[in-house]
Length: 340
Image (tube, rainbow, N blue to C red):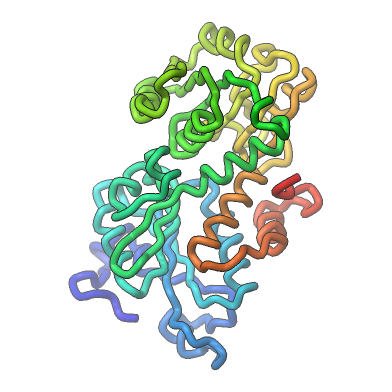
């Protein structure tokens, strides 16, 4: 699988920080001597050519994304090789243009490129259209279809903490963050009939951009961007029964998005932090009678949908759950089970 003409890397100038041309070793019985030699070493039973699957972007979670999808591809005996690309924003159109080559299965998209990736896809799923973000691009011939499986993940996470009947869900929510994950949250909340959603971000203009994107979908309800200030937070948390933390605060152990005294009694909290079984925000909310969940069920539901879109097969859920536990260094019995 030679690189396309005009795309040869050099030490002085390597596309996408040199990562577009780095082939990572898959788990499915490949030689360690490099990607081209690895292809020759594939077992005879493999009839499909090896396909490349870049993870595009920079995110704490991308190592977990890689580990979980690799384990699933190995379990399904699929010759898909995951790579890591880290293009600068101005390089993203060229990076995505490369994916139209039949050497690629598509790409997984991480922060900060999810919104731009949606604009560069040829077709978008309904969830990607509504959210304005795509976290997976699937190649269909020379076309790229953008999907947002973060939305599937948020739905699963909320279903795990809110009443079973959606008609019984609260109607006011606070969302912390303004990236691709927060867009997925807002898309789900609007689609679920929430009547007031307050979006907080430390950079107010980013929260305002989220609200502007959903202006049409949010007709008939209140969707507001508010500054991350104690006064505004206290007012909105006094109204809301649901809090979703999509800000990334809490990834570092011991950090919390909000002080405990701001949390009311009986709050539903979905903290989309992946790498801890519990966070200070979850502990504080639970101490006040709240119902809480971390981001693991959301991550696994999104990962399963991603695998299905890429392969057309049902995801090996237990394999993916075990791989996530191993990657995070957490006991497997503590990892959330999707659907519980």
